[in-house]
Each structure stands twice: as structure tokens, then as C-alpha cells.
Image 1: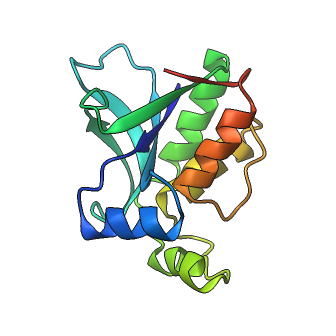
Image 2: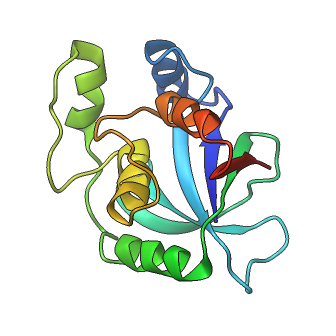
Image 3: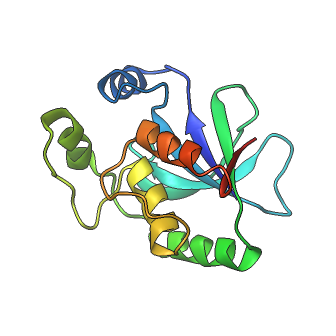
Length: 154
């Protein structure tokens, strides 16, 4: 299993998130190990405003736009996290939660998610790592760099 961090300023939103959070990252995905992953395609989960909310998606993580970090956990934990994510597919994107970063407040909706929020929750709720509830892609990367035994850059 991996955490993938998007490092390419492709859209206005990507640039705005990177500038506001003082980070080179604007998006986060969880990549699950799958036998049926095709060439340059990975089975990923996150929440995306472009896709309307939480979803699984096949993504090319080898195109130079992603930094990847392996999460050293046993297969049964990865399966448990995948099942947790499956139960949250179809939830709306938390646009108000994103504005919490702008105004320094907690506008999070309990049933809507933004990318790093749901990726961190999937790992936190399944006992992998105690990420904070309000977290940006850049902050997630900083926490992972501190625990080099659990998180290893690809």
C-alpha cells in the first residue's frame, strides 16, 4: 500500500492549495496493491472535487507528477483499510472543509471529505497512524517523513 502525493501545479486549484498550505503537494491518494493493476495504472482511493467526492480510480502514478510513500503494513490491514474506503464511496467532496484552511476554522462536514482528510482518516481509523483530523497533503507528507519505519519513500 502507498500514499501518493500530487506535486504538479496543473490547475488554479492545485496552485491555490499549494500556496495556501506552503507545500509542494495539492492532492493525496491511497494506492492499494492489486494483482490486476495494468501498466502505469494503480488502484487508488481518495476524494476529489473534480470527481464529485470519494471514489476509487485507476491513476498513472509513474508520470512524474506524484511522490509515493510505501506504508509498511501487513496485507490484512490493507484489506481492512480498503473495505473501510469501500464503505465511503460516493460521499460528497468537502469544499467547506477546504475553506477551513483559509479562515483557520473548522468547517468540516462530518459526512463529506476532502482528499488528505479521508486518506488520513482511513489510516487513523484502522490503527496505522494517528494523523490529525484537519490535515493538508503537505502536513500529511511531513508526518510521514517523521516515521521512517512505517512510511518509506518509493
